[in-house]
Amino acid sequence: MEENKTKDILKKLLLPKQQGKAFYRHVADNTENSEIKSRCRSNR
Image (cartoon, rainbow, N blue to C red; front, top):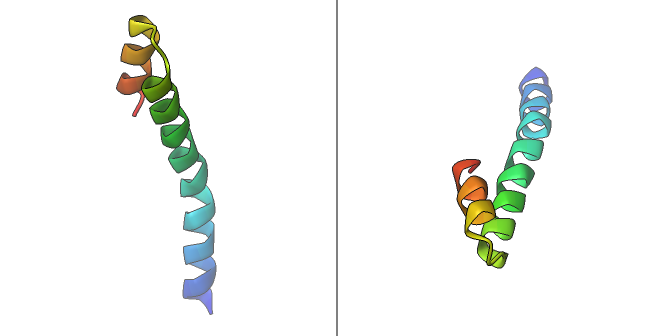
């Protein structure tokens, strides 16, 4: 039971990071501005 609780906590901690990576990937893939594209790719 304690192991499941630990896994749930870790999943909740990692989710925002995964969402952030997805956001920056989306912006980099959909912008024509090379400066923004470069900065978003460096945040992955």
